[in-house]
View 1 (tube, one colour):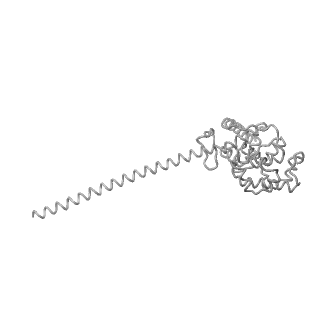
View 2 (cartoon, rainbow, N blue to C red):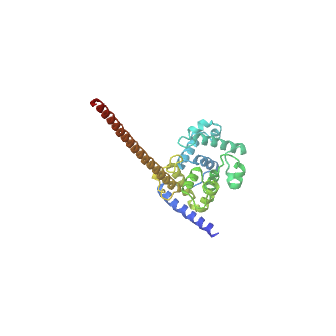
View 3 (tube, one colour):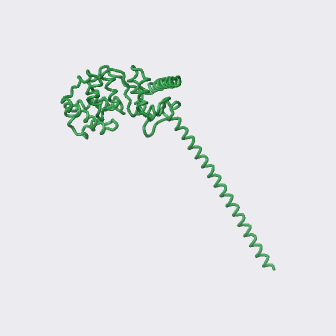
Length: 282
């Protein structure tokens, strides 16, 4: 019990220390003072997953202005919707999910005003949408926090990648559910928005999926992933150095053999020449 409590305390302390650094490195967008209607909350959550929050808000505003209403957006081709999502990652996929969400909601109640769902709570919303592919843990948490104004920490794949690389004591980084639970338990309700935004911005700008910019990261001295990369670089450098030393030794040995063979050849040549001279004299 004491060991588990100690690991949990270390984890909470580490999360708070890392978050204080992330908050200084990244400028978190201000949280809107008033909640959006439930439908817009759902659409924004889909757009903002693994994406920049401000860009997602701009895209949602663009969609609301360019289309006559949500029904026109619902019946529009995915390719056309994707054009308005320019700048967001996976724009075509997000356009498809937005269209699917609108279609499901309309087919369920034949309207887009679903504020009565919010009054009935998250359990009812899950009953209506829980089986849909766009209703991800991130979207659910955004609904709870941003529309219902209750404690929830939205965590998407980008945030999971960041904290998996940083490393949390006593948490298996490959277990997404455990990672989400550990973060949810450690972050105070008043910090959930800032924590989500700072963590995602770090993943979008520094801790990239393919080529992380560890040299630009303020966490490189405490990040487990950065430490492993340094160890790999040291190991590679050692191998290259050994290979270079072996190559030099091999080249030196080759030169010595060549020199020895040249000297031996010279002695044989001199011997043959001396023999010829001796026969001529005789």
